[in-house]
Length: 633
Image (cartoon, rainbow, N blue to C red):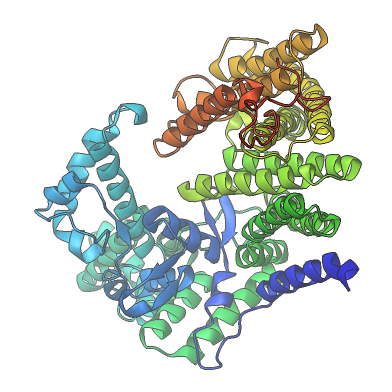
C-alpha cells in the first residue's frame, strides 16, 4: 500500500484543485452576476470583461477582491461594481475605502481606532478638502512623499475612481434611465427643427430645445466622468465609446446604440430588483457580442474563466505542499515522500504554465511585459530548472527549491498586482514582440537561475549550521548543483544583457548609457564571472561558493527590484514604498546568512567534532572531523 502513497497524495491534491474549477451554482431567482461579468468593455486601452474591471477596481480601492460587510456578509467584486454602476446610494454606504494614517483621519476630525474601512458617504463632505491636500502631494515624486502625503493621495485616487465608475454607464442618481432615453430620442428631431428655426429668426419650440440642451449637458458630463468605455463600434474598425459619448453621437446619427438601450434596461431592472428582466437583457447583450463581435466575446469569456480559476493562487498552495513533503523526506529519509513532492510539483507547474500561457494569449505578447509577469516567469523558470536537478540527483533538494521559489515568486507577483490590471498596455518602447521574446526572456531566465543558486546555498547553510543532516554526499551534490546553475545563469544573463544593448541601440540610438537598470544587469554578469573565476582559480571551494551564491541573491534582487525603485532612468517603474522595506529586509537576511556561513566549521552542527562520553576519566577529547567534510574556505 505504501508504494501507492505518491499517487494517492497526487490524486487528493488534484481533486482539491479540480473542485475549485467547477462553475459556481446560481439560484434560478438570483441576479446572474457571472454572465454580466463576461460582457466586454474597454478600459485602459484594453478590452476586458466587466469582471476584470470589478476585481481591479476593488483591489485598487479596497486592497482585496472581495468586500466583507458587517454581520459577516460578503460581496463579490461584481456585486459591488453592479451596485456602483446602477445603485449608487446603496454602494455609497459600503465600507470600501482604506485609511489607516492618523494624520489623514485627523484631517476630518476623526480619532484613530481599530476601524480602517470607511464609506464614500462618510468622505462626501470632505471631497474638496481631500482634493486640495492630494493636489499638493501629487506635485512631489513618490520617493519624496511622507506617509501622510502618500495616504491622502491614495485616498483621493480611490475616491476619484469610484466616482468615475458611478458615472460610467448611467448618470449618478438616474431613476428610470430607459424612459429618459426614449424621451431624449423622441425630442432630438424636434429640437433640431427648433434650432434651425431659431437660426432663421422664426418662431421655435423653446421648451423642447431647452430640455434637449439640458440632457446634452448631462451626457457631456457623463462622457467626461466615464471610466468604462462600454459601447462597442457598429463598424468593423471603429472606436469604442462611453455611454455619454455615444448618446452625444446619437444626435447626429439619429438613433441610440442598442447596447446603450440594453444597459439602461439592465440598470432599471437592477434597481427594481427584477431579477428575471435583468438576466434576460444581460443575455441579450452577450448574445449581441457573440454575433457581432465573436472574437471579442470569446477572449472576454476566457479572461473571465481565468479570473475565476485563479491558477497562480492554486499553484502557490501546491508549491507549499511540495516543499513540506520534500522537507519531510529529509527528516524520515523517505523516497516515497520525495516522489510525492516531485509529482505534486509537476501538477503545480502544469497549472502555473496554464496561467502563464493564458496571459500570453490574452495579451498577445511574450511572457514578460512588466514586473508582475517577470515574477511569474522567474518562478516558472526556476521551478523547471529545479525539477531537472531533482530528476538528476533525486535527493529532495531540487524539489524543496522548486516549492520554495515557486511559492515566493508567486507571492511577490500577488503583491505586485495591487496596483490594478496586470495585463496593462505596454509602453511604446516595449511594444515589440521580438525583443520581449529574446532580451527580456533571456535576462529573466538568468534571474531565475541566480535565485535558484541562492536557494541551494540557503539550504546548504541552514542544513549545515542548524542540523546534522548535511552529509558529505549531500554537500557535494549541493555544490555541483550550485556550480552548474551559476554557469547557466552566467550564459543567459550575458546574452540577455547584450540583446538589451542591441534593443537600446534601436530604441534610443545608443548601445549602452549606464542607465541604472543596465548597470544592474551587468552587475549580475560580473558577479557570476567573479564567482566562477574564484572557483576555477581555487580561491573558494564549497563553502566559499555558497557564500558568493548568497550574495548573488542580493545582486539579483537589486537588479530586478532595487533599480526600479530608484525613480530614475529609462527603465524605472517608479518607487514602491511598500516593497522597499521588504527588499531591504531580504538583503539583510542574506548578509546574515553569509555571516553565519563564515563561522568556523566547528560551529556547524553537521561538521562539529563528536565528543567521547567521559565517566570521571581523562578530559573529553574531540573526535576527528568526518572524512570528506566541507572545506574550510
